[in-house]
Image (cartoon, rainbow, N blue to C red; front, side, top):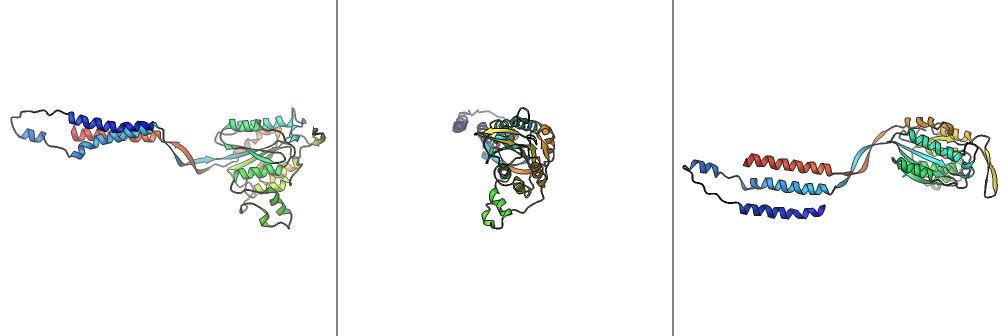
Length: 333
């Protein structure tokens, strides 16, 4: 559409041609007063103002047809929830019908169905390690696709799921969770061993604009103590709500020739939630998680947004046309 701006010189040439083609009409008047009044001329610049305004208005409309956009800093409401999903092999145990994996998916879907549309949701998957599978977004289809695409892996390091969730919400404060916990537990480590942004700890649960929902059976097989890892979230005021999958009695599962019994560790999950100022839920009562988003605050922040300017530019062109018409009527009748 911007190529159409090349037609503007043709409009100028056509206007000049019309001026030259105007015919001069000779009239006879009985007196001299009337011709003097009729020949009273306007300033030359006044004759050119309306056509120039029309030309600029045409150019503006052609520009609007190209749908221009710009980056604007606009106020937006921000509330964020990070779904941290356990994808370890133990999640396939069948002590919860039909199995823990399906129960976890049902819990996640029930939770998403209750969420208001203005809450951003991100997905973190963890087993022996953790990864961000979907950055926080308002698109529920993308979140569901990330949940359905999870694949089971060996090991259960709950601490990595918590650390990745904290990092997702605070991207400038990368946390090496292993070194951070060792620093807390051993005097042999110094501050140089922790690759983290220095922060001033706040009260647990005091960060109102985001929360983590951790779905797991709570039984750690590798990595540091997840209760210690939850302190990383607590120091930033980030609440970690936990959902327990499984039963205390557990069930035997086989993997790579090994048979192990996996049990629900509710004690650990309750401790994680309590340390961060959150709550523990059982997967059978996932609907109770409606309390999670109700506890979230809503802050107004300035976010850069791609905004289309077609309407504003077209409105400006309309004002130019109206001004040209008004001046032409006022000056030349």
